[in-house]
Image (cartoon, rainbow, N blue to C red):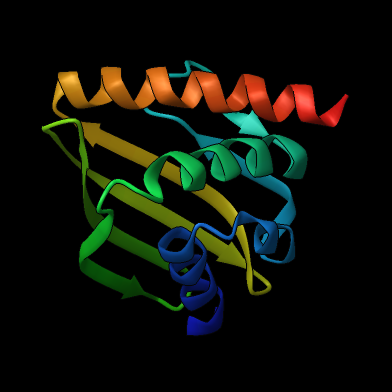
Length: 133
C-alpha cells in the first residue's frame, strides 16, 4: 500500500467529498461498525457506511491525533470530533490490498459518543438508501 490511498482517505474525511470514495474501495471490502453486529461486506455497503460517516463528521471538528502505518498494508489512526459538546474519541483501522481499502474498522468511545454518532449515522444511511432509489 502506498500512502496515496491513506492520503486520499484523509482528504475525503477532511473535505467531506465522499464522491472520491468509489476510487479507493476494494470490490470485496468489509466495514466493521462499532454498533452494527455483523460486518458490512461488499463495495456498495462499505461506500454507504463510509459516505454516511464522511457526511456526519465533516462539520464536527474531526481530526486525526495519531497515525501509525505498519507493514505497508495497515493504518491505525486515532481521531477526535465534537457532537454538541460531546467529545467523541475513536480509532480507525484500515487495511489495504492493491492500493484499495479492503477492511475498515471503527472503534468509538465514550458510550454517549457512540449513541450520538449512531443516531446521526442512521439518518444518513436512510438518506443514502433513498437517494439510490
